Amino acid sequence: MENPLHHFELHTLVPIRIGGLDLSITQGVVMMWLAVAAAFAVLFFPAARLKLVPGRRQSLVEMAVVFLRDMSVELIGKKGPVFLPLLAALFFFVLFCNLLGLIPGTFTATSQIFVTGALAVTAYFVSVGVGLKYHGLHYFKIFAPTGTPSWLVPLMVPIEVISHLARPLSLALRLFANMTAGHTILAVLFSLTVSLGIALGWLPFGFTVAIYLLEFAVAFIQAYIFTILTTVYIGDAVHLH
Amino acid sequence: MEAGAAAFIGMGLAALGFAGAGIGIGLIFSKMIESVARQPAAEGKLGKYVWIGFALVETTALYGLVVAFIIMGSR
Amino acid sequence: MPQDEFRKGLSLAARIGSEFVAATVVGGGIGCLGDRLFGTRPWLMAAGLILGTAAGVLGTYREATRASGEDSPPDEENNR
Image 1 (cartoon, rainbow over the protein chains, first blue to last red):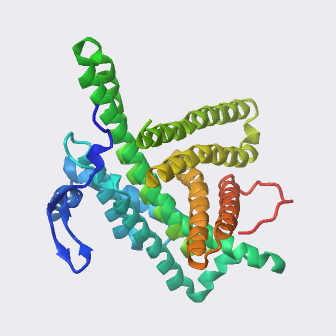
Image 2 (image 1 turned 45 degrees about the horizontal axis):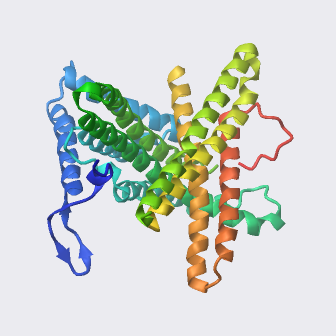
Image 3 (image 1 turned 30 degrees about the vertical axis):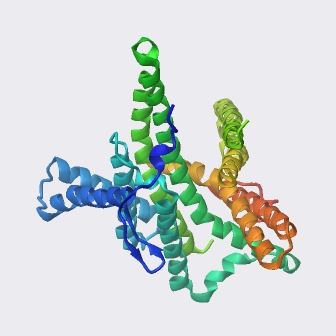
């Protein structure tokens, strides 16, 4: 049986080296380009010819964007729609990476922890920047909440800093673990189907189909969770809990 | 036995933690739903403890994941 | 509105479990780096792990308290 983790390995397609940096084009980069292109095709062309009475595709896209806008208003407040471009970009990028990775034979860009890590760090720095912009240096008060006894402060500050730094890690790990786990299960089940043949292979094949459908739901849910948590973090920075 | 094979077995054993988390999450939420069905007024008070318990159960599983990653990294 | 309930539950369930572990890992990682810097293996890592676990417990407790509404008992410290 082949190694089920094999198809998560990156293969260099076009080697590019600038200085000590390895900027090679791997199949992960190509999949991200494809995801951007797919998002562009789905989102841009309905937006280019807006109709007063929306067609099928336009109303679908409008539904998704209105959904994200309502979420941002609910979690951030009146300033929520300011962040809508960022949130929508994150949502559609992760969603299309997840969905394109489900096509057999392709590569899931979001199953690389570097990709999810970069997205999570971006979201984290946006939330810190928003906090600094709206509250100035008062933002650092969250590390020593009011009402903390003064003898507890030296203990509380490192704890608060650690729990603040844990946010991007948990964002990145969740998306990465979900996508990797799902695809590994699909690979294991499918290789079982192949090795068992027709006599018994229908059993794992049925599971493969079921898990494949589940993975469709997971692709949407994980993209949504990534966006909602980014919104929650930005909302925390705006309101200063 | 080859050392690499032992590492793979260890990673698999670490993933066994998820079985316990599955049982625990099922227990927590079944009891939560049962209690709320009996006494709907208690939902607000129970909610906090349910989420704390959920976090602790989930944590055991994710610690298993972390151990698996550590084994994978130190292989 | 059931939509809001669903959203709150989903975001809480998603963040509460993994943030506990992430806090522990971050604490241990910072301790490990400090150990490598100062050569005090393994003391800083142990301290970092303890602090990280404390951060995880505190964060979880805070999130759960905030999510379950304002009807929490008054005798607990309210460090929002």
